[in-house]
Image (tube, rainbow, N blue to C red):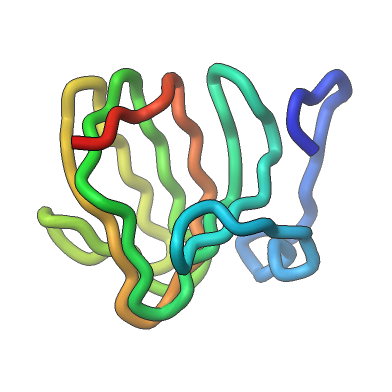
Length: 113
């Protein structure tokens, strides 16, 4: 679904509509469903229980909506329904003890520390 040329509407995303979408491997234990490639990029990330993403720096705004489960970083735990803004210049690592699915938008690619 990357590089949209037409509008996209996903029904019932918050109620689990993301479960019927196609994901592919992204990082160890994390899968991605790309909704829009390029900059900004928009995707769904599905974390297996215990999966993590190493420490990284944001070069642009990152916006996250937790759809299912709980995502965590050094600042805390974010259950389903949480909305997170990580501004340019901020750094963190991310994990999910029980697994989760998030809607994420990257203004620009991240840099791994």
